[in-house]
Length: 376
Image 1 (cartoon, rainbow, N blue to C red):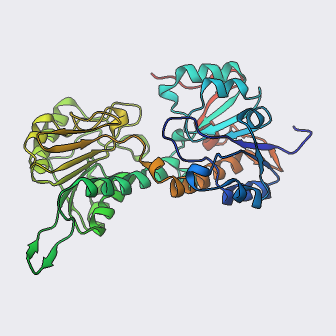
Image 2 (image 1 turned 180 degrees about the vertical axis):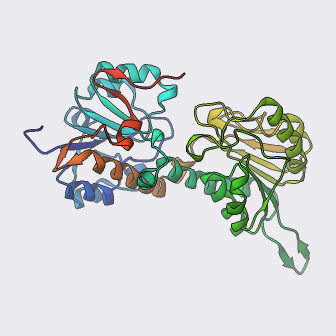
Image 3 (image 1 turned 90 degrees about the vertical axis):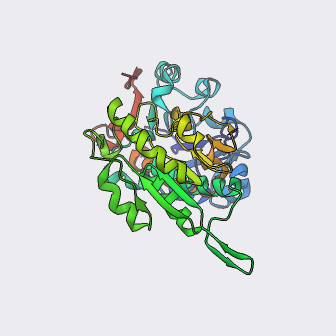
């Protein structure tokens, strides 16, 4: 297909406050071993603590500008969706792989299709065993769940663990985790390690065993609801009546908690509203809510995406960049995922995506000049 070695390119992420890099030196070495030529924009890994010298050490080329990388790469790896300026530099016929947020980026998809770029969005990976080592959502959720608890701990004006001191006993913090996907389970595990007493809720009753295995208590809010588990094992969208019952039952739990970590998401939909304004009003002053669903509208009625607000002594945090705040390990995990996917596109040192492969076909959002996904 190419008269020269296939080139894989990585440029500096341009999104505000994004510190991750799509490829770390360890993964670059794997791709080079697969007969690829790897080119990194100068400084692309520095905010994740991977200096240019570490890429040169494994045989990658470090190029001075974004243009030099994008105009010569056959496969571009990215974390966030590229800007329109970046897309304009990508050569026709090239492949693009990253977390492209296709349901929220219709203009980007149209531009990619018009440029003749085949784009693959890793959020759309099928939930099958063969794709587990490519699962960027799980990797980034692990980072978010861990960091959310640390964020809450720094805001909470009390200790997390039980302490026996000469001045008396300090009771442990009470933590409520809503949603027991990867982020929620990591939040439970982290809060337990810090010594908190943890209770957790998920609309899917089958995750009870996982919650209890981590030392948390499962919160029951009534009979299981139909449609609680959606496609691929994710939480499904429940009826308005069921959601109202959940809100009322959870309000009592929220009022007793010192920390509430919310992680509930429904793919392609607004995040379910679990913590109402009235529930927050009953929380003790000094309590903290960390809403990991902020980008999808938030699980808490008061959440403002990307902001930290205080309401009657209660802090409500809506962080959007937790994986970026742990850029070193987040980049390392993401890079391993994206490299596994890239290797699935490579055969005998050349890019040969197999569109009969479920992993390839499910993630492809533009190909052959067409947009392959809609928001319907």
